Amino acid sequence: MITINLLPEEYKKEYNLEKARRFSVFVFLSLYFIILIFIALLFGADIFLKTEMKYWVDNIENEKSTEKVKQVLGLEDNIKVANDKISIIQKAQEEHINAFEVLLSVSPLISDSVYLQNLTINSDLKKVSMSGFSLTRDEVLKLEGLLKSDAFVRKDSVASPRSNILKKSDIDFSFSFDLK
Image (cartoon, rainbow, N blue to C red; front, side, top):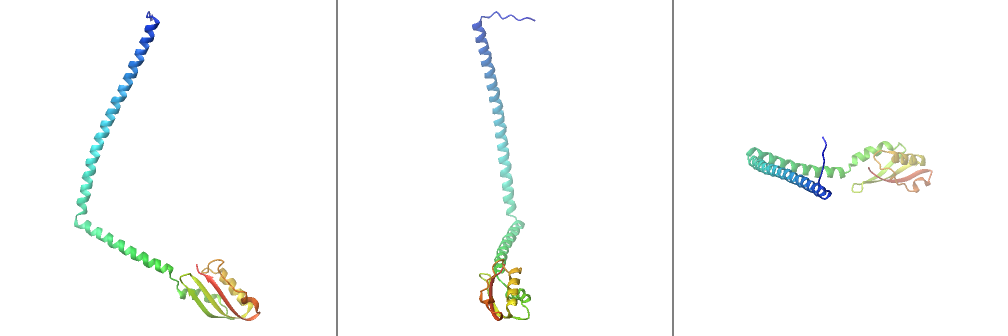
């Protein structure tokens, strides 16, 4: 089939412009109605969800007023109070240093030729000072090495005065170190 367009050029442009305008109006109106339908659906869903939410909130409030729930809430409060007390006790136990444990840790390190004369424990600073007597310098150096490598002593915290190694025998020694 052959189409012959006998319209003048001016009318052809006007006709194409009118066609484009009508198409754009159609597209915009179609989008407008689709958006209106979408908004109406969202509005309906919003109303539905609000009524459902109100129903469930009221239902939960009614359940909270029952005797069993009141008992459970009371138990929860008691558990919270007990947990607070336990955490306070646990914190106090963590800060406390047991002198017996320190003695048990130090005693295997001391040989037969070393005598411990004084052991002072500062539980606030977790610091221990000890002094004693040794027959030889080698025993003092051995004790210092054992303290530096022991598990309950904080690494690089052993302090030993030079007077511990000045004499070769009959040494009054002292050490201080931090606990882990």
